[in-house]
Image (cartoon, rainbow over all chains, first blue to last red; front, top):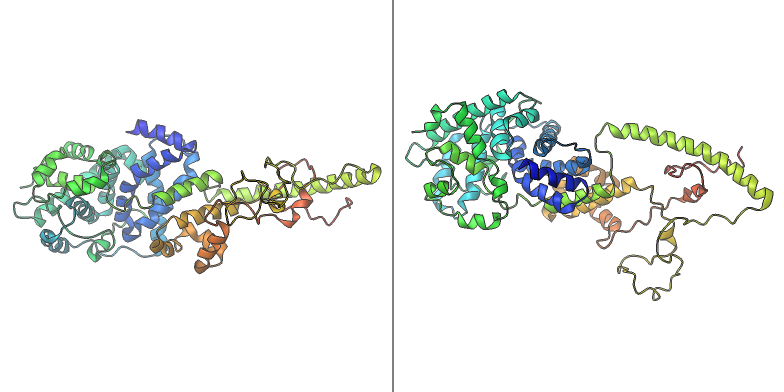
Length: 210
Length: 272
């Protein structure tokens, strides 16, 4: 994955527009999900700022894990954004609200895949910031623990621990949320898109450092 | 029960390593995936199709979080590509620390240019007065434009792709220096990036710092639309209206070929 991506990065640095497009398509979904956990409904704005900076700074990228480089930019933009807004995330998603959402699942005619992603991200966003970021960088962006640590300015071991704790917490959450046999409280919940549901909009993760 | 509650670090790592990259893997079939996976009532089948142990809800959650591209997630693609294109066209200093130094070097270059031009202007003036030197320098020394002096007859050039809105390529274009408009070019790119956004997102975009320069250049958020229309008239962008009046003063073959946008004042023509 990293190997062929680096070829694409080189091509993009040389000005290949298609290569850049490929990078965007590979990275943007993960970036957007990660940013949603950081800044909520403003994730799309921050993402476009991120890509603006990526395209400007791309010639200066000297190698290494491109994903980590891009995510670092995204994270910095998100921090700037939060600082600018002076608006701190409100309460995390109350599990109760999610459970209520889930009860409407049957009436939803939307694709379960989309909704599952939405809810899963909202659940991850309820974790403490460090854990949420660790989980998202590892599982959604696809960084290894070392790269995620570099993005977060922490050691790989710390990232592993945070991710582990986060997953444990999620396990408890899921168990509580679906005491019945339906092991998936994740699938089939009908919130539309990021930011349009109040419960999900509140799902910010307060970043670990300011 | 939930087996993950008893998981150890190794399990976590295995789990985290097995989930990602699905976003990429399913990238190409993203539009169809939303239609094929509607079967919400059979999580088992769904999960086994994705190679996730069905016994682990956390694995399912991670799989869902890293699920295929959703509708709208790639909506900013064209804007990003436009920004990329603009950045290629005008490689600008991106790091906020660099502009200061650049401004300083620009100032130094301008200063040196001023001195040099004043000196050479004196020499040139002397030369002209001494022995009636060559003709005055034409304003378009190095432009590879095809047949720039074709006049304004318009019908004589069928091969030119002149848009309906673009002015006739004649006198004003030939004097355009390629050096000056770095900021203008950036605004160009911003305009294009802004245009590439969906109409309902444009107003919001103008509140982001990424477009602040555009707003400033236009003179306000409400002016951006008209401003961009003027600057990038939908068709091929042309670099006109960037002719600075002082440009002619700098056309002398001074040693500093890349003269700065702020040329020496022609106030001391005879070298003092």
